[in-house]
Image (tube, rainbow, N blue to C red; front, top):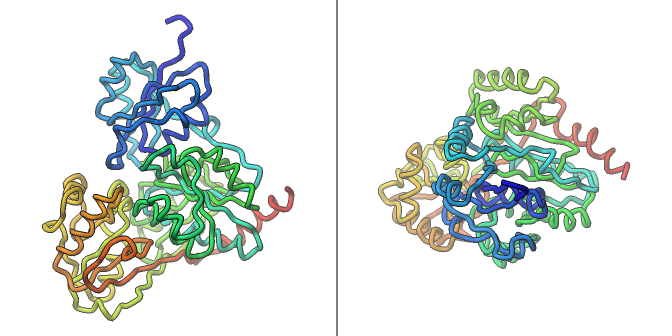
Length: 445
């Protein structure tokens, strides 16, 4: 083998994989990344990580293949090491992929905080979770509000969702709805960005989180890391908050890398205590006590409001929920379904009316029944979502996504919006913790 670089494949889903490459492999002479593989998100394979991002050591860029091709890539490219770099999967899934890599002759690796976290000049509050759909978004909004009320300039940095032309998404700054349109944001991106914009916050995202960090900390006293899936923060946190979902008790110790977040966080927010069973809440309390006995535990509700509840009583309702929460988050329902049932609606099954890739989504995620995931990773899929909504025989559409879906999709029947925010019901609350842990760090700068 001599002194040739270690040949590497990075397994990912257009997020953590690119970050790990940028901060560790891009300029490292001891490694050569021969390929990325892609999964979870539709249509993100078949691209190339472009030369402008890959750097001078990769003048042709780096190809991105479907994950199913991993054994072939290992054999044909003489791969020495496979790096697993995506999130929200069972521990057994990680070891299954490890077995594939090992059987094909490569080593298998997970990369942690020491090699992937960047250091900021300003304090960082990181909001993560043990599973997708646990309540990161409303927790992030709550923390941002606390900081802004204290007079802090805040920049929200969102976990990556670069599903378009990568060279055009190196650093993205969102301050208005026009910015969302200009960057051709997917429904998933809009779901994460719009609620912040509605409150006057600036959001950064993109591909190169070193460059993003430089921009964000130049205009902020505090950075709030708004995590994706159940991934680890990209920036080393001053305060690390993990959100835990008692509707999925036990998942905090059985999913990667959510268990890592549960073990390393300073604060654990047990969310949805108002809708979960007391037994499930207690099970999560006991689990956290074993995983991370030093963490401060905050119990919280996510109260649900509906703008026109009178439209629901006795009506046939099509419920549209946040896509990632339902798909790889494995939830069977969300806030929209809870609200519809609370107000007397009868849920309509949209599966017989699903079109194109929406029908394929139901085949891939058979646990979905009377709920429509708001899939919209490209213009064609948005059209298929719109066609599915309008073909489903319902009296009213319940929009349980974090955005006003009517801005993206032409819904041909009355629609109600469901909203939810975080409300702590135990002491200390997040305000007390942020004032104690973060504001002094700002003052010391």
